[in-house]
Each structure stands twice: as structure tokens, then as C-alpha cells.
Amino acid sequence: MTTWTNWAGNQSCHPAEVAAPRRPDEVVAAVERAHARGIPVKALGAGHSFTGVAATDGLQLSLDGLSGITHVDREQRRVRVLAGTPLHVLNPALHALGLALPNLGDIDRQSVAGAISTGTHGTGIRLQGIAAAVSGLELVLADGSVLACSAEVEPEVFQAARVGLGALGVITEVELQCVPAFRLHAKEFGADLFEVLERLEEDVERHDHVDMHWFPLTDRVLVKHNDRVPDGETGTPLPRWRAALDDDLLSNRLFELTNRGASRWPAVVPRLNAVSARLLGAREYTDDSWRVFVAERKVRFRESEYAVPRAAVTEVVLAVRSWLERHRAPLTFPLEIRFIGADDIWLSTAYQRENAYLAIHQYHRMDDHGAFAAFEAIVAEHEARPHWGKLHTLGADRLRELYPRFDDFVAVRDRLDPQRRFANAYLDHVLGR
Image (cartoon, rainbow, N blue to C red; front, side):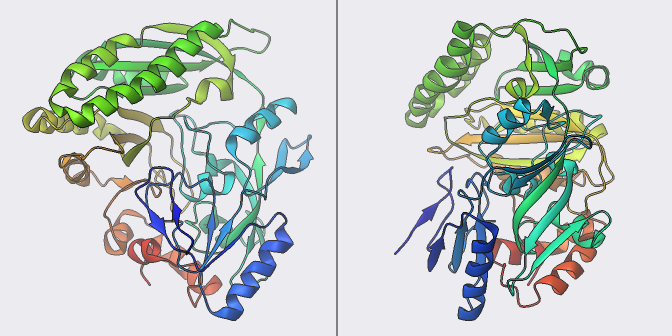
């Protein structure tokens, strides 16, 4: 029996069949085969989602072999990319063409299709998530037919499929609207939580990208301000020794050891967090955008992330801080706080709303001691929308209230997959049967 487990190790399944197509026509053949057998189909990217969005007991389609740029329109700055292309492969390939994505998250292990389908977003209040850069898609539908969509062709399918949760079909190719390659000036420093919250609105407006990592059971925050530099200004990259010290030794190797220690002696977590907050010192450098955006994450964890209206962020942070202080929950990972502008994608967490994102993490070997449930209860008071690829408990009834176009999405799903060939337990829960 084949067993699949996601990156975090908290989701697993036993697919009846596994296929690894290397061309779109092989995807078609695999879907037709599953259709004939009457078994469900789920496409699998890098397995970085913490939910069961990619789990199946039917046909599992690994898109790892469906990788690479297939077409470049230099005049329009658009590229067509096979769906399984990992972001860590795509970013340098775009750079070689003089192009870049407007925004990125801080992990680049996901496939293009997986990142857009679950709403990966990054940070920057005047920007949007990765799916907003999608200008066209090709889907293999449940009967094996191929449907192309864009803002002009099948526009309702396009609006649904950009963040489609794998519920409409198998994405085989994505067209991305890029921008000229650009560089970012990065400034990172430690600060007091209350001072950060006091100037938060000013910082979010002033800087292109704001990312904050607050260490639980302390009042220390690692603040990251990333800003575009004018064309022609190169700046100085981070020295190799400093990158190796901060990003490999401290943030990964030593952090893994401290987490293993914390899993045996949870009582030491407050002191460990205080030390961790101080170890990551101030630094300032300039580099290509994708090199600044991305951080290597080797230490495995579980994560829940919710989007709340931008104006609610301080109230939510203080409520989470109060709960953690009262219950002394030994969370070893910092809580991340980011910001994104509104978009028009039906199931995007930023649909018609500027958002603050709060993400709570825990080391994969440790219990969260009720912190995830408490976090979810706190953000629920603020019309919070969950990241589709991260842990949450919300079902279709509540999500319908949070997303004005939820029923429009379901209507497209009813048209494209009436027999629910692309369904699984997670989609049954969040979308209904």
C-alpha cells in the first residue's frame, strides 16, 4: 500500500494509484483513466499544505515532472509555466529573463499551482498575493477535456480557479503577469512589541513590505522592512559568512536543536524564546527581490494562519499575547504578522479587503497546549478568513458568510465537476458536498 505524508507530517493518505505525468497530455490520460474507474483525483504539488487539501484515496497526480517555462512574451512581460514548477526553480529562471513576480511568500518550496490554489500571499499593503499575478490557466476537467480561461475567456472559471483549492480540475499550465526584475533593500532589527504596535500603521504605509516575527512569552519582535531600490542602484548583498551564520546555523541548525530540547523540557521555552529573539541581530543589505523575500525553512512545524481586517491587528495581537501569558503555552516558533492589499479573486483571503495576517506555529514534535484553538477563537471575533493551506476548523456554512462570492464559486464547481471527481474530505468540509 502506498502511503503519502505531507511536509509537516500531520497529514497522510493511501492513494489507490499514483501517477507522475511529465506532459499535459499525460495528465489528460491519467484523469480519463480515473474517470473510467470511477475513482477521485487529486493533484499534488510539494506537499507544503498543513491541511488535507491534497489527500486522496483515489488517483494521486504528482506534478513534480510537469515543470518549466513554456513560453515568454517579452513585450507583455508574461510567461507560461507548467503547473508543477517549484517557486525555487521559477524565481531564478525569471531573473535570467529580466523578470520577477511582484510579490512572494517567505517559502519557495511550493509548486506554482499549489501556491496559487491555496492563496499563498507574501506581504505588502500595496500589493497582492501570488494568485493576483495569474493572467491565464489551463485546467484538465473531470472527463479529460481541457479548458483554458482568462479574464476574457471563461471569466467566471478564471475568477474561481486562481484560488481554486484543486476543486475544479487539474491545473496544467499557468500564465503569469511579471514585472521587470527588481532589487530590495532589507533592514531587519529587534524591537519591543508595544513600540512596534504603536507605530504599526506608519510602518505599513511607509514600507513596501513589512514582516514581523514576535517571540511568544516575550515582548521581543524581529522586524523586517523591505523596500524597492531605484533602477541602477545595486547596493551590497549580505556577506556569505553572515548569511551562513544567521540563516543556516542560527535559524535552522541551532533552532532545530533548541526545539528538540524544548520538546523534552517545555518549561524552558520562555527562556529559549528570549535567547532566540536576541540572537538574530540587526542586519541591512540589498539583493534581488526573490533572494530577499525567501527564507530557508528546514525546521518542521505546524501552522495556522488567519487574515483579519487590517484595522484589527493590534487588538488581535494583544488578545493572543494575553492568552499566552495566562496559559504559558510553550510555543517555540515566533508568530508572524504580515499585510496585503485587497484583490478581486473570489476565494482569496484578501477579497475586497486589506488584511493583516497572523500565523501561529508550533514545532512538529510538540503539542500546542490549546494555543491553536484559542488563536482561532480570538480571530473569529474579527471576520477572520483562514489560509486555505493551513490549519483551521471552519466549515462551509461559516466560510459562506466570510466570502461574498462563495456560492458563485460553488456554482462553477457544480458546472465543471458535478460528480465531485476532485473532491476529498477537506473539500467536503470547506465547500460542502
